[in-house]
Amino acid sequence: EENQNEKYFLSYNSLELKTTGLVHLVFQAIRYRREEKEKRRREELEELQKSEDVENWRQLKKNKTST
Image (cartoon, rainbow, N blue to C red; front, side, top):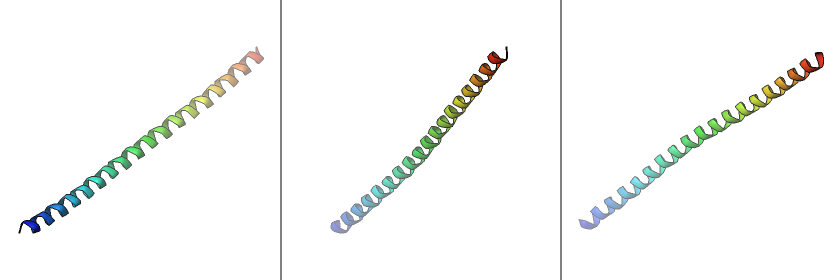
């Protein structure tokens, strides 16, 4: 009887560990995807800023040469 209970307890613990591990992995994956998305957005903003800076610089240069 006690041996049987111990088996159930062990298998329950094992299942609980697997479930906890899976939940952890899922949350890790969600966090990773969110961080990657934010990183991409930051990089896109930086690229946009650079291209705007270049465009502004060209505009300034053009204005200086035309005056």
